[in-house]
Amino acid sequence: MQVVGTAAGAYDKQVAHCTDRSAQCVDGIGRCADRQEQFMERPFTDRREAGRLLAAQLAPYAGRRDVVALALPRGGVPVAFEVAQALGVPLDVLPVSRLGTPWQPELAMGALSSNGAQYVNDALIREAGVSEAQLQSALALARIELGRREARYRGERAALPVAGRVALLIDDGMATGASLKAAARALATLGPARIVAALPVAPAGARARLGDAVDDLVCVQTPASFISVGQFYFDFDQVDDETVRELLDRAANAGA
Image (tube, rainbow, N blue to C red; front, side, top):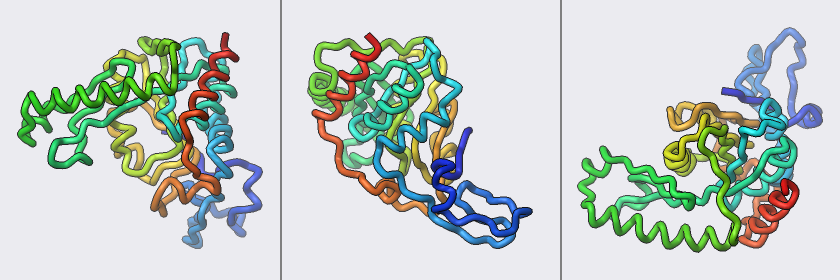
C-alpha cells in the first residue's frame, strides 16, 4: 500500500512540523514521534486539486496503455478526470448500485455495475434468508436505475474494456469503504489484471477494510481523526450530472 502523509510539499508551511530535526513524523498526520502531537492535514481546495495530488502518487502508471481510470460517479469524476489527464490514460465511469437486503438496505448483499459486472454474496444471502425472487427483484430495479445513469453520463459512448488491464478505481474519498468494496467486487468479475483503489483521503486502516477486494490502495491522506470525507475539502459541493457528462466528453475528445 502506498500512503503519502502530506497533501503536497507546497503545504509544508501550513502544517505543523517537528522542531527537533532528529524526530520522525509518523502515521501520515504530521505527528512527531517524540512529542506525540497530532495535527490535521490541510484540506483539499476541491476535488480537482485532490485529483492532481492523487495523480502525483500514481505516476508509475503514467503513459501505460494497459491502464484505465474508472471513476465512481458522481463525486469521483472530477478527481479521476485530473488523474487521467495527468497520466495520459483513458477515463470512464463505473456506475455501481449496491444491492441491499430487503429489510436492511445498508447491508450490501451484492453489487451491480452498468457495464455488466455483478457480484453477489451468496453466503450473506443464505444467512439473511433472502429468496431468489427478492434477489432478482433487487437486480431488476438496479439495472433500471443503472441504465438511466448510463444514459445520463456516457450517452451513446460504449464502456471502455477493462479485461487484462490495470483498473484505477477512483473516488473522492472513503468513509466505511462499503461502496468502494462492492464496486471492486463487481469490477473483478470483468477480469482486470489488477484493481488499484485510488483516493485522496481515507481513514487509517482503510487497506484492512477493503481486504482482498483490491490489489493495492494509493491514498494521499490517511488521517487518524476521521469523521467524514467532506471535512477534508474546502469545497465539497455535490457534482451534478452535467459536470460528469462534460468531463467524460472532454476526456474522450482528448484521447480521440
